[in-house]
Amino acid sequence: MNDKRPVNLDLTTIRFPITAIVSITHRASGVLLYAGIAVLLWMLQASLQSEASFSELKEVLANPLAQFIIWVTLAALAYHLVMGVRHMIMDLGYGESLEGGRRGAQLAIVCAVILIVLAGVWVW
Amino acid sequence: MVTAVTNLGRSGVYDWLIQRVTAVVLTLYTFFIVGFILSNSPLDYATWEELFSQFWVRIFSLLALVSLAAHAWIGLWVVLTDYVTTLTMGSKGTAIRLFLQVVLGVVTVAYTVWGIEILWGL
Image (cartoon, rainbow over all chains, first blue to last red; front, top):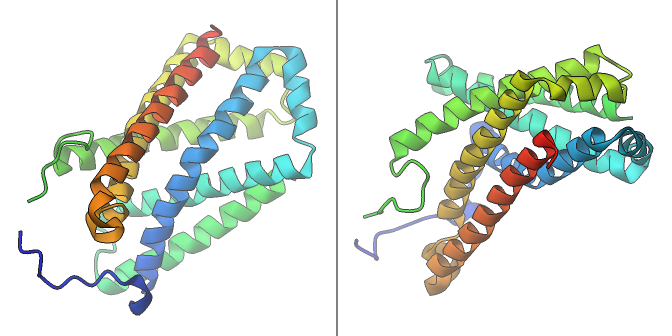
């Protein structure tokens, strides 16, 4: 490979279009969600172990910090899921044009924000 | 020339397909669990325990766990091979990336085994 070929990956010099923002945040939400899986598995364990641990978990879920962590995890899940569905819709051949891609990205962001707000309402 | 040795499917086409099949499984599982909790609100232990005592729910959950492991591996591989490279990190880039992949691989296996233990109450 020619090591001297020009490469511009200086992200600070690139203005991100909405499709790029959606792409990078899809990745970021996936990484965040990967950490959040530990929280979800922990909750599943506590909820299934015994009746006592189930009610203990309910008490923990009344704590604002715990609620915040769970909301962040659910927000990452909602965002990642919506962006994934967007990907699959584009795989099926819809919204593949430049304008379609932008529209789809905007629509996906609106859907994700609604779900994230609803997740917040659910947790609190 | 990029040699595919650390990605799950050994080829981009397989990775592409695995990522989508697992995404569908995980989406269905998410809808199933969230839907169940919402339609049985406020959730009590007996209802919840009864759900996971059913064989098909355990199999569905296991399927979701395995899908999660594959999906996370492919996704994290993409992220790591894009951002943790010799280009961004200097000459040690590849070593750092392989180290991170080992760590994430261990975590992913731990998640899967932990999930199985929860489901079958070991």
